[in-house]
Length: 209
Image 1 (tube, rainbow, N blue to C red):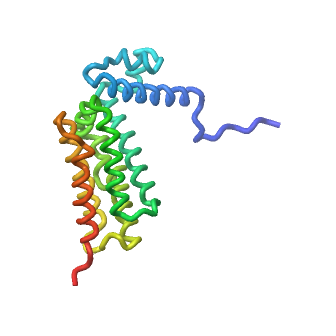
Image 2 (image 1 turned 135 degrees about the vertical axis):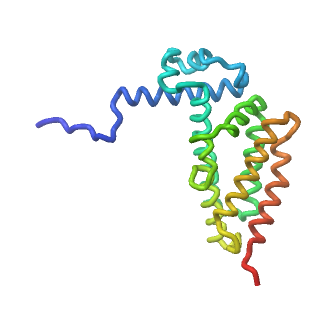
Image 3 (image 1 turned 90 degrees about the horizontal axis):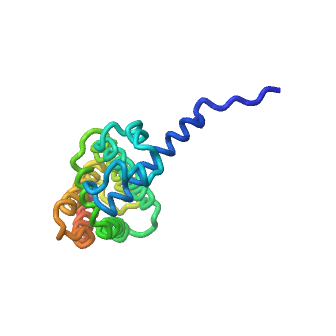
């Protein structure tokens, strides 16, 4: 009896190794960027931390900008997952949204050397930039967050969910831009009034009489 053939969708050993190397390079880059900044980190440093040969880096990323885009895309997916998880949180909107933004602020404020990378990611276009538009990872997650609030009766339906989601995404991006450009800008502290304003906006988006 012949052995079952592997599914076409199952990665072979070479592809698994390739995926592992790519993930290791991204993880190593994020760690080093947080420790010594973007400009202070060389490709050789990333390869040494990832335990791969320097030529392997360029097998995955044609330039450093391609690495930044990959990190931005990964972070966008992770941020989207956080907002999706918040949709299942039974806490009211006025607690959930401030809690989310506070957590983002605390995480980044504790990593000041990450400012440079955040600034680079915000300036990037292409695939990484597309993660924040309506059908990108972050934009779509913001819309689902708003839609869940509408379904709960917490958010009014005077305005389309995608419009409110655009405003949420824009407010967060402006705060991140300020944080990346100004060392005196404390993200957690500045996201508090942003969260309050967004809650007011979302709750007041009720149908007109």
